Image (cartoon, rainbow, N blue to C red; front, side):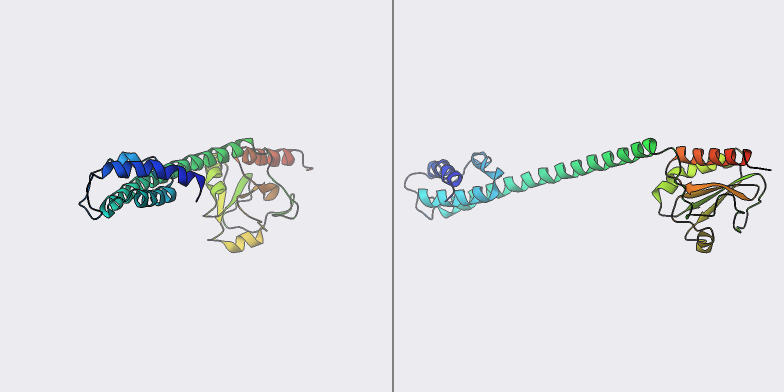
Length: 228
């Protein structure tokens, strides 16, 4: 038997023995007891229950007393499990809040330049592929989004801000116009293309508002220095 269990048996046996009045038969009536005596043992449920039973055997306590003691321990264990469950829920809420804060921090501290790869999207300097609603006059912005894209929702306000400032914006959703995604060679979302006078001025995967601003600024600078 484990040493800890042996140490717990004498104290429990002493309580059970004191709860039984002298001369009470082994099958006597229910004897009142103080459940707080075994509350400390409830912190280790398995050891607590076994120790109560063994202590009852040692002390020769009535069966009813043993059952009452085990019931008290079980009640304390249930209460401890409820408290533990609430603590786990609280910890989960804190972890979720921390995860969201880390996400916001990542967006703020991410690279300030959109990821522009030659093999992704239409080539810079080429005529923009066909797209309904594209005027091919002055500056335009084509934003490729997916309905389940968290980053798309994060940069959508920035895209709308350019539209409020007078720049035409064409938003393409993958689930609604998959053929456009294929024609424009979009690798994923969010992907933005800056079109100036019908030509691709800048493009790239955009993961923050800073990258969106940088992409538009880069496209404008390229067109300013482009040969006539």
